[in-house]
Amino acid sequence: MSDQQTKPTALVRTLACPSCGGEVRIRANGISITAICGACGSTLDVNNPDVKIISEAKQRTREPPIALGMRGHLVGAVWEVIGFQTRTDTAEGWNWDEYLLFNPYRGFRFLVHDEENWTLYCMLRQDVPDPEAGFEGRRYQQQSHGTARTTYVLGEFYWRARVGDEAVVTEYRDGDRILSREANGDEIIWSRGITFPEETVQIAFGLKTDVPASRAVDAKTHTSGVIRVGVYAAIALFLLQLLPFGPGHGTIVFSRSFHAVKADEGHTVVSDPFIIPGKGGNLRISGQSPVSNDWVELSTTLSGPNNTAYSATLPIEYYDGNDSDGAWSEGSRSANVTFRSVPGGEYRLLIEPYAGVFKNAVTRFGPPAVDYTVTVTRHVTTWAEFLLALVLLLAYPITRYFMDR
View 1: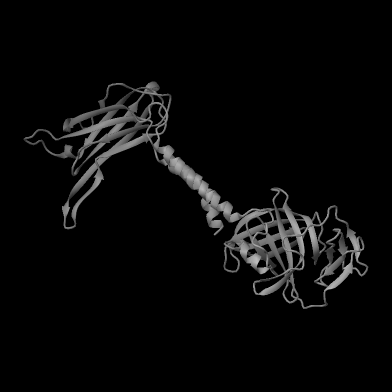
View 2: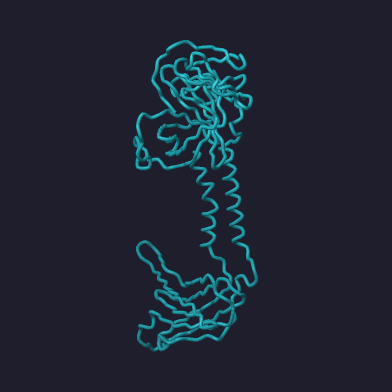
């Protein structure tokens, strides 16, 4: 992609195609090397006085959405379309169109149309060592990398353009700015591009608003559809999260209240055996205590078959009072822990209670004591997995939204 600075060398040149006799107009006369006949598709060597035929196309030519010879006003200049080519990513198989624009005072530009954007490129006269490290005050991120093959050509070019040409193309993006690196053998060309809305190009070249895109894809409509589907899926996921599924969902398999005195501190209370149903699933152990300005710590162990054990500590503390700012409270009178996978079978619960009240001396009302309740629930609703699924579900729609802004 070039940005040659040149002044007009001659008027538009008209010649006859040696293959079919059709009229071929050379707009960048003195600069263009090849031209493709619009009637028969033959590639002509217009740099040769005899206008030799380089090759003949195997298929008839087609009229691009922006016809050769059309002029448009972009970035402060009038540009004329003199060449057109279609290129294909050899790995992914997706296509895009490239229009070669010419201004006798500003040289050449490339107007590229893919399924999402119109981008105007000009060639840089310098190498870009590392776009991701920074270039011209911007930090670019690699967007794509692949081999581009030319599959169709029409019009005139300042190089020998032909079907089958290949180049390795790497593109870097920062917002609406793009850096493109094309490597063809030992030749490396860097170009800088800026994207435009489709309406800007349509107005610039006087196109009808219903002119089809090169691949008939409206990127913004597609993005809004993706976002809409993502929102609906998130709502459905939330509703499913609230619905109970499976046998024994939310089943309380054990619940017992205890009264502990200071002498019980550090001693293990062993519950009666109880059955946890099912072959597997999560299990929640909850502790509650009506403490006030005090704390209780329940060291629990769930002991099951084959010497399996699940241990956790349930810290419960609650404080409240009044001060100059009014009533206040902090903490909670309950605590719980959830084990993600516990097989079914017969279990016992081992509990060692510790409490702040145990530090007090014996009063006339008896030894310091605390009441607490321990509950075991099978198949509880958890939100950690829901949040993870929600993030994964919305990652793509959110990314598309910000990329298309």
